Length: 133
Image (cartoon, rainbow, N blue to C red; front, side, top):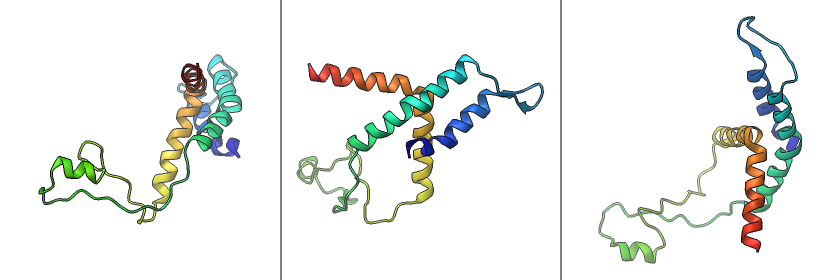
């Protein structure tokens, strides 16, 4: 399933890297960049997909916290409500998600994982090693 998620971003990367400007056509050749992207797609992309599925829990329905707009609440009261102007506003789970926004964010994430997959995976490995010692 992970390979299907990254198929379109990988195809876009291949199209961009293999586009011949002078001929205005796609000329496929195996270069070092194409080899890197192929290894990134075949090896590191599924690993990153599995890492994310383990690390990020599915969002659950929870009550919505809102910042009062009248400005009468003090920072102490906002901290008691566990919200604040600097922490940002929690996501509103009562509204349905826009499928196009979710797909666009996932597409950008998958594209980044294909472009920087080995770097991200090694960074996660070093972070786990450092925290585990």
